[in-house]
Image (cartoon, rainbow, N blue to C red):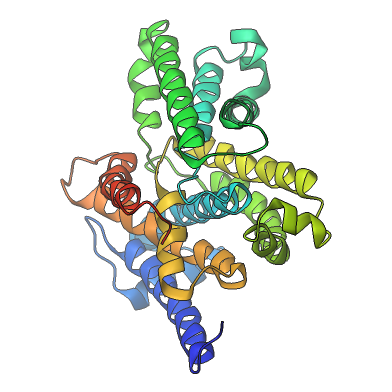
Amino acid sequence: MRTPGGGARRWAVRGGSLAALAGVLVAAVGVGSVPVAPGDVLDALLRGVAGRSEGTRDVIVWQVRAPRVALAAVVGAALALAGTAYQAVFRNPLADPYLLGAASGAGFGAAVAMVYGGTVGVAGLAALGVPGAAFVVAFATVVTAVLLARQGGRLPIVSLVLAGVVLGSSLSAATSFVMLTDRERTAGVLAWLLGSFSFAEWRDVAVVGVLLAVAAPAGFAARRAFDLLLLGEASARRLGLPVTAFVWAVVGVATWLTSAAVAVAGVIGFVGLVVPHAVRLAVGPEHRDLVPLSLAWGAAFLVLADLVARTVLAPVEVPVGIVTALVGGPFFLVLLRRGRPA
């Protein structure tokens, strides 16, 4: 039910979110061992776009910090959109890429491709390359979790989360085993698994950005179908939604986004859990706002998490996956304690 003044509040949240995201992006590019004022950041970015970068400060902004901040933004938006989609189709407030095992599955597939790259690897996974192997294992993990948790046509929340956590833990152990088979690469793969944007390049931004440019409009177009699923599968079918085909199409796209994010930045958990719930607290459960605001809030959240990761113990850098886990873990326990979605 819409309340008087609700429309003005929604527009205020939308406008404030975009302004906050722009501010976070500019501020994050300016923070570092060589501070750069916001106005100088914008000037350097404009010169970089025009191909006229000049001086050391422009090189720092355009070639070092901007790719890192942009990659954190698109990965955060992708993981938040994936979490929103999983929660909608499973009607499960605890579903997210990490808890369903998709992130761990993508991590295992990517680790196999990294360690055994150029060979047939484990069951031919390495031959698929990092993104392909990450997607195949992530999708298989989510499908397995759903099949294990399904009971007589129902999908209990606790069973789904337990299945995802158990599968994710098993795949994490398998990833550790893969790393032990090639000790020379163990340190590098382990650092990547914990999540990092320290080696970000513009081509990585392009890979995730293109996928996001396709998935985001599709997610917004599906907002009414997501709302129908909130009424239950039977009601959604009566209202004309082809539920089974729609659910698996959404799972495929959400897993596709997750595996792409893991392939370029490692396993970063809880973004897809925390962000959609925070947005619901601000604007309610309707997906016309939940989908676009999750994109903006997810981008801002992960840029801020990466900013903390690279500054809190500078010059030592903390893996960004540890920062998101420190935020997401307590948040998950609060949700579990409350026993209901935000």
